[in-house]
Amino acid sequence: MPEGDTIHYAANRIRPVLEGAVPDELTTPHPRFARDRWPQKLDGRAVTSVDAHGKHLFLRFEGDLVIHSHLRMTGSWGTYRSGQRWRRAPRRAWLVARARGGEVVQFDGPVLELMTAARARADQRIAGLGPDVLAPELDEATFLKRLRADDPTRPIGDALLDQRTLAGIGNLWKAEGCWEARIDPWRPTATVSDDEALAIVRATRPRMQRSAHDGNQTRDLQVYRRAGRPCPRCGETILERGMWEDNRTTFWCPGCQR
Image 1 (cartoon, rainbow, N blue to C red):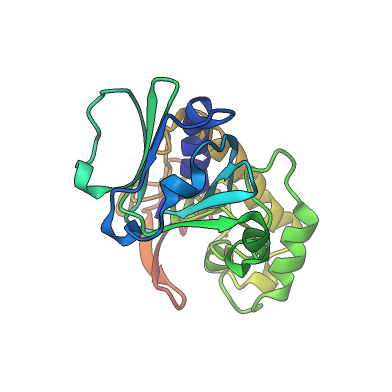
Image 2: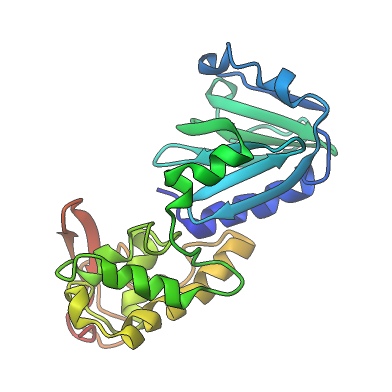
C-alpha cells in the first residue's frame, strides 16, 4: 500500500497542474461513475487546493466540493504532459483532469469519491486520523496520547501502522524507523518509553520528507525486504516474520534492535 510520502509526492506533482486552475476537461471514464455526473457538478469550478493527510489525498474545488482518494493496494496517481503516454492502460483510468498543458490521472481506484467539505470533515475515515507524520510541525503530544490509549500489549511496530494514532507510516517506514532508533518492533508498546516512541518517528520523518520531495522511497533501505542479509550496522542476519493480527511482514535486526 502506498505510504504517506508517496501520497504527498503525488500531491506535490498534481499541485502545479491543477491548483488555482479551472480544469480544461475533467472526465470519469470508469463505468462506476456513469450516473454520478462529476464533470457537470465540477464544471467551471477552480481547484482551490491539493493536499494530503497520511495516505489520503484531497482535490478541493470552489463551492466546498472535495474529491477524496485513498489508493489502498491497487491505486495510483500519475501526472503527464499533454499527449504523453500513460504508464497504465487508459481503460484503468478512473479520473482524468487536464489543465495548463498537463494531465492528472487516477488509476484503479479503489476509493475515489466526490463529497462536500462538511461531509469530509465529519467522515470518520478522515476525521479519525491521527497527526500526519509529514505535517510541517508534528503534533507529538497527540501522537503519544493516542499511542497510550491503544492496546499496551500490541507490538510497537504494529501500533505505528494504526492510522488513528499516526497517519502516513506503513510497513516500509515502520521497519526502517524501528531500525534507525534501535528499537525491537516486537516490544509491547507498554515497554516502549515516550522518548523511544518519538525517536522512531523522528528518525522516520526526514527520510519520508525526502521521499515526498523526490519520489525516491527506496533510497538507502537498511532492513526492509533485506531478510537473510547482514545488518549494515552490526552484521547480524536480518529476520522477517508476520506481525500481530494483520500478519504484516516485519523486518528487523535481532542484534542491534533491543
